[in-house]
Picture (cartoon, rainbow, N blue to C red):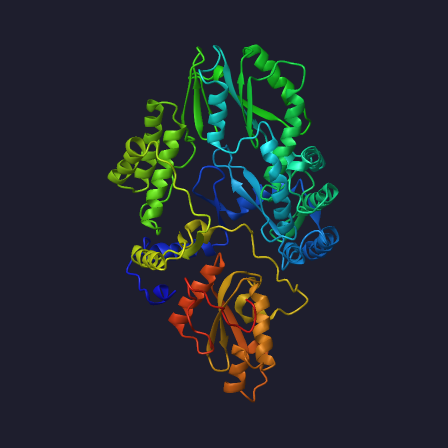
Length: 615
């Protein structure tokens, strides 16, 4: 940590003062809103009124709720967890699964810039909502079932392996490759059917699944609770999603896979001609048809009328002028003879955006990105010509992102000619990975050298600062209401954080308005919770605490009020290491008079971080 404390970076920023001012103006413009594009990367600038109108057309299908349901759902979820898990899991785990200082899930839209009119795809940011941790626990149970789903694909390479294994010498002459996209699968899943499909799989394969001490009825009860309480907030209004599963819920993908398995099992068991190969990645289906075009037309009509909630869109090589169709990130070409090739596919609508060469990331990250993307192009190419086409697509993207052509070629040549058969080195099972903020290459080399000389089995993952997307986008249309509500006074809102008192994972600064001295601290909890603890220390002149000792020493006759202190957020952080490092740097730079503990956090030989409260 001392390396961070004493390091002075000479790296120039890659945006000017005018750029930063423009970004600040854009962020503060209440008439505009910035969102990530749904599938085409990049950012989309919208008039706020247009964004609200398009997203409100989505919530029109939801059930309006009169008031914030979060507090009530917190209690109901905690009671259910106690009732269901008591005696089956350790008390520590049960306590960790209970909601604490929850927030309402936020509904937002991502513009589909690849479609006319740029409609919105509804997404739910459910992190920290009352059933979030319970959903995480259930996900760990039901994802064990996915390897038992015959059609399930884990990734593109799994798809290619199935294809080459089933047809090692090419497809039968006249074979047709087809793809199927399930229209709005998450939004159309009947939750009751999804639960029943999951429970049926659990009963069938109970000996292969770790239920962590629960019974199958327990799992069903917990699933029903999570799926029947899909509450979201949009703006100042609250809604309940009554149809489908929220895209953004932790359990949405495995439930969708298991629901589709139940549907496709009945389809594939029907007494009619069937595909020679049938594979699926969540809602994207790939198949090989060997019974002629007319029979495929009839099969498409059959499955499109099979389930009242599901509709499908098809692509097929026999209707393509070049006999090509994409699936996942691969383009397959099928000849009339049955010969086929595969290669890397990049959507025409996708912006050629990767990590820019001038971005504030370690050089090793940029080299690794070139390597991974180029290796992907080679692995997806079924022959040298296909691999060359894929590598050229990757090269063009990196060149447009500012990378030197020599660097790109050197890495690609190492993949193609030197390390073609190289095995990936196995990692030691005892390695400890730590995440540290990236500042510049000089500091990176120093930290890596310190880690290496420590003889500890440690690897550093470098994390860069906030991106433009982090700075300009937000899932919430506007900040949540203060947890205390409009009828009570919130000391944190009055102390300088109006509309932000609910923020978590922050480094903050408290100023004593009686003398101007400051204190810098950190907290993973809501900042209002920690600030109220500090105010209690000051009011009660609690010995052994930073603010309590300050009042006893500097203002012994004062009767401090909440209004005698103000608070500001200096930084938001993502994890404990970032909190500790950022707090140490701010203490070093600002030298706050009220901090008694000013020592740095020791990276390689951690010591307890002393404080009057567990932060």
